[in-house]
Amino acid sequence: MNEIEILKKLVSFPVLGGNSNLSIITWIKEYIESYGVPTQLVPNKQKNKASLHCRIGPKTDGGVILSGHTDVVPVEGQDWTTDPFVLTDGNDGKLYGRGSCDMKGFIACCLAVLPQMLKADLKTPIYFAFSYDEEIGCLAAPELVKAINSHYEEKPKYAIIGEPSMLKPIIGQKGICVLDTHVNGSAGHSSRIKQEVSAIHESARLVLWLEDKMNQLVSEGRLDHRFHPPHSSLHIGQIQGGIAPNIIADKASFFWDVRCIPKDKAEDIILEFEAHCSKRENELRKIFPIFKIDTRQHHPPVPPLDTNENDEIVAFTQSIVNDQSWDTVAYAAEAGQFAEGGFQSIICGPGSIAQAHRANEYIEIEQMNRGVAMIENLIKKQSK
Ligand SMILES: [Zn+2]
Image (cartoon, rainbow, N blue to C red; front, side, top):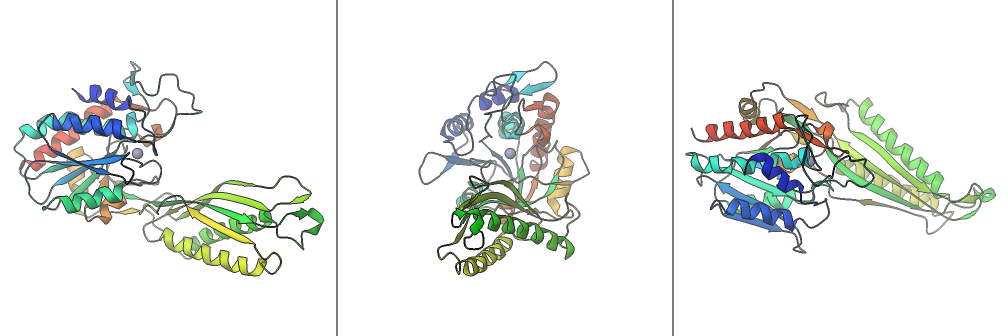
């Protein structure tokens, strides 16, 4: 099968982040094993999802991990002109389908080049590492990285995360954490605003606290000019609460995220916020004894990627994509988690992030060709 036939197959599995990915991972496993390469599954506790890793080539240090995620984002409410789960050639040089660029296109390139890897005389190995639940908070990568480190006696050196970057080497990614905060106040007639605790008024203060926190980081000069914007951002994207103008709201909640440059830690910002919330709870319990502010993280914070432009992996990746530049991205990915596992890590894959997560997602055939060429160049490097 060539890369486009494989991509067609991969797109046909409508595996959303959060859903079981056993259908697609089993197909990938069988495809790889049909070439005589043993694979390892890393299941979740419920055994309804699994990551996969395998090694192609000799058991020696210095290998390169090619990493991708098998889940995609939903299509609901989007105005698709084709069936999102049928890869459709638009006869415009583009292949349409959910996940075509983010990031089944890269996985298809890896799988299509597998026979060439086996024919080549690899001196150092290439590994595949395919995860699930990336789109809902990069949930599976930590376990996958751990499994790779414990399964192989040899130590892989590099991890290339094939997120869509138009095959430009990406050395930095912001970390992210998504949270929601629930404020429990006391209801009453709006005229009693001084005798009750309005959950809306308190939520509004907390929202402003978060914005002030972001501005404080900026004014303290906590900047990293490789990123746009160059500072950590805190943003509240949804707020809910209240029923009428003359009723004090007893409940309000807001939904927010923190995107951190490598020198800041989401954990620290969240701890500071929680400390502020307990102070507010203590003050407002003088008026309403069971006043409460609860904040829940939707997932453990995803670490940033902070590869130095002088690290070896940068020149290595630049040479296999014939592009001497590098860049950073603001989206979250698993690259920071691979870096934490001890591998020099970089993001570099076919397709553009501008096409990801939207209706009529596509990947250009030219990008697929270049994705294949990148891995073919990798084989040459690993055969020397
Ligand atoms: Zn992705």
